[in-house]
Length: 81
Image 1 (tube, rainbow, N blue to C red):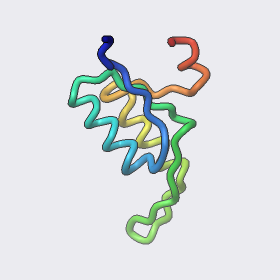
Image 2: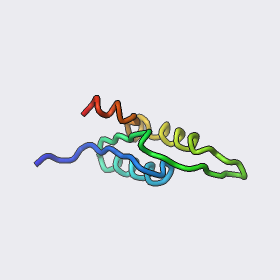
Image 3: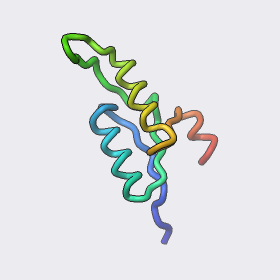
Image 4: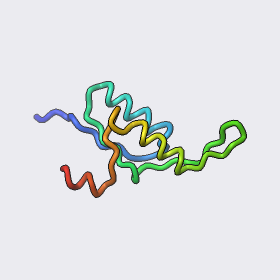
């Protein structure tokens, strides 16, 4: 029976569930792929400043990329499986 070694992650919210799941999966030894355009988030407010959802999402994808996961789009995923 084959072992699961790779996880493909998508969903919401980029800054909560996706970030936590990817980091935990990496810590547990999985190869992690996060589908960047299959995740979403919302605008956040910090110090009375609205941070647009796109900025929030892009920041979290950038922080996960090459450290905890490969961030890619679904088209790229089709090329590797």
